[in-house]
Length: 443
Image 1 (cartoon, helix red, strand yellow):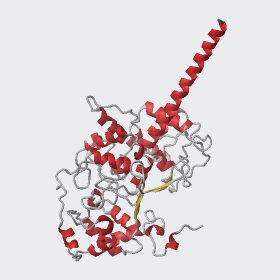
Image 2 (cartoon, one colour):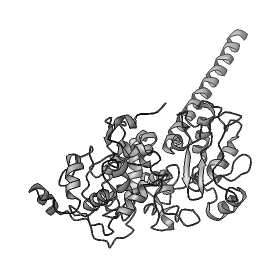
Image 3 (cartoon, one colour):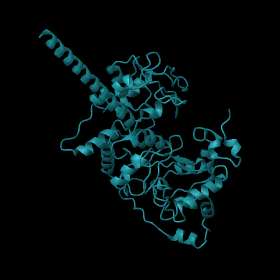
Image 4 (cartoon, rainbow, N blue to C red):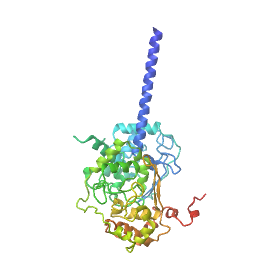
C-alpha cells in the first residue's frame, strides 16, 4: 500500500511539473508572437544580424542613437532584470539603473500594454532568446543634449502613466482588439503621427484628435509615413478591409506596395500576424474618419494615357517616364496588381510631400517575399542615369497624370537635396552605376 501511495504521489508531482513546463512553454510562445507584433527585432538586431543584440543606429534631429542589447545576457543585456524592471523599461521608459530611455523606444505607446502581455514578453526574452554578450554603444548626441536627466522631465510631461488597455463599454471586441494592437504593441503612431518640436507625438490615440495616424508630416530617413486615416486621396478611404489585411500580411495589394522603413515592419512583424489580428487592425483603421473630409475625391483621367498611346510624349517628364517607368507601371499608370504597384491614385503619389517618391526613384526599392506572397520584387535605382532635373520632371509627371493632382511642383534642387543627404543616401552605391563592378561589395 505504501508503495502504491508513493507511486501515486510521485506521478502527481511529475504531472504537475509537466503541466507547469507546458504552461511555461505556451507563455514563451505567446511572448514570441507579441514580440513579433511589436517588431522588437527591427530596432534591436545587431548590424551583423544577431537578433535583439542591439547596436543599430537611428538618426534623430539631435544626433545618432543606438538600440540596446535586450537579450538575456546578464552583463550586457537584460538578463538580470526582474519582471517589474522589465515592465518599467517597456511601459514607462525607465531602465534598471533609473535612467530615462530615449523616446525612440516607443514607451508612450507601450504604456497601454496589459499585464498578461508584459508577462509573456518577459518570459520570451528571458527564456526564448539566446543571450548575446555585446556591449551597448553610446549615442552620438553631443553634450549637453546627451544628458539623460532632462529626459525624465520630458517623460513626465509627454509620456502617459501606465494604464492597461480596456475596451470601451459596448465596443465591438474585434474593433477593440485592433485598437489595442495599433495604439500599443504596434506603436503605429510612432511613425504615422506628426510630432511637435519637442518630439512628442501630437496625439497618442484617436480620442486626442484627428492628427493621430494622419501621416508623419516630416521625412524619417528620407521617407514619409503615410496617412492611415479615411482620406480619399492620400489616406485609406478607397481601401477595403480586405485590401488592408492583404497589405498588412504581404506588403502589397491592388493600390500600392510597401517601401522604405515599412518594408522591415512587414518582413519582421506584420506577416506573422494571425488573420484575426490583421483583420482587427484593418477594422480599426477603417473606423478612423478623414483628416480633410472636404477634400475632393480622386477622379481618374485617361487623357495622358491616351496621348502616350498615340505616341505623344510632349508633356514634361513623359519621355523619361516612357523610357524608364512604363514597362512596369504601364502608360496608364495602373501597374500590375500585387506585383508592380499602380501609380494612378496611389496615396503615396498623392501625398503633399514628394520625398518618398523622389527617394524611391533615386535609390530603388525591394519588395520582400513573405508568407502568402513569396516573390521578391526589386525596382532598380535610377539615380545613376537620371540627373536631378530629369528626376524632378518624371516625379512631377507621375504626380499630375491619370487623375493625380498634386499641387506642389518638385524642383531639381529638391532632388539634389535628397541625393546629397548622407542620412538618406548613406552609400552612393544606392544610386546605382553603369559599371557593375563598382557596385560589388569591397573586402
